[in-house]
Each structure stands twice: as structure tokens, then as C-alpha cells.
Length: 238
Image (cartoon, rainbow, N blue to C red; front, top):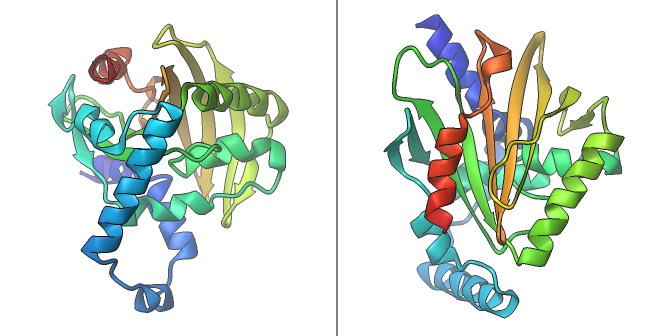
């Protein structure tokens, strides 16, 4: 049970760590619930922007994002409140920003809309746990996200700091043959005296960026989210 709890804590990276680093009781007291009208207006603006740039509209992104059990994992929806703090992941070195943005659960170029899911193993023998998010862009911007990521991996091998968190040991992995293009890498998050290696797989399918990261505290080199799981999500995008 201790191992499972440790995995759950590790999988909360980056979201829970980001929230703990930049949230406070005062922040919560200052928050005001958004009205249904303003939320509806915001969604319409996003839909209009998606149409303008040829991106997948927010409602369509929600429809294609996996939920429930699939390929040995349970995909659980993550609330926007739990991921909002990740937008503030600013690296202390500009060349590392694409990596910092992904660590926060977003892309360095703002997407029209984003859908987040936590990934929990549905089988006890599977020690890998993690997260996934889909970001809707114009195809041009999605390609730029991938270009920026590759550049960042070259220029930021020693890692970066953000919001009081340290990420180091950036290592480029063999790019998987997924989607239109894909990048794989491993990065280690240092939390106190605990080092947590995380394996990222970032895939572009048309204008959608699908980012996955996995943590396996028992066998870090096996922490990548399986390609079968990624392919199941990509198939829904079309």
C-alpha cells in the first residue's frame, strides 16, 4: 500500500506540486465563482477562435478525449481548477520554457482549449501511473510547439527551476513512431530529498498536441506510458 500511495503522489506531478507551490488560503478566499453566463461566453469565444484558425473546437476536443478504462489504465477527468496553476510554470532560463510549460500541463504556445486526464493503472501489477492532456492548436502552431520542444531539449540539458521546484537530468529518448510526429524524453523532478524521474511522450496529430507522462517508482526506465495506450487516444482524434 505504501508503494501505491507513493506512486499516486508522484503521478500528481506536476499539478499538485504546482498548486502547493503557488496557492494559499488567501488565494482561495479571493477566488470568485464564475457565472454560467461568463463561462458560456468564454466557450463561445474559444469555439470562434478554433474555427478561425482551423483548430479542433473545445466541445469536439472533449468528445475525443478518453475517459474511463482503456488499455490497462483508467482515464479520470481533472478539473480546470486543479490544473490552472500549471499555466504559471515559468522557467528560470528562457530556453527551458517549452519543458517548463509541459511540466505544468500546458504547451508553451497557448492552445485554444486543453483537456486533462489522470492515468491510473487498472491492474495491480502495473506500477506506472501518470497524466495526459490534449491541446488544440492550429496545425501551424502545433508544429511550432514540437519544434520548440526539440530545441529546448538541446539547449536545456541541465534542467531548470520554476515556482520553487527543480527539474534536472533532461534526457532525450528515441522518438516513437506515433501520430504525425512525436518526441520522447525523461526529466527528473526533485521534491525535497526525493527524485522523481518522469518519462514524457509528446505527439502531434494534425493540430492537436497529445502529451503523456508516466512515473514508475519501482522501475523508472519503464515509466513511459505504453504506446498502445497512446495509440488508443490518437485513434479517437481521427
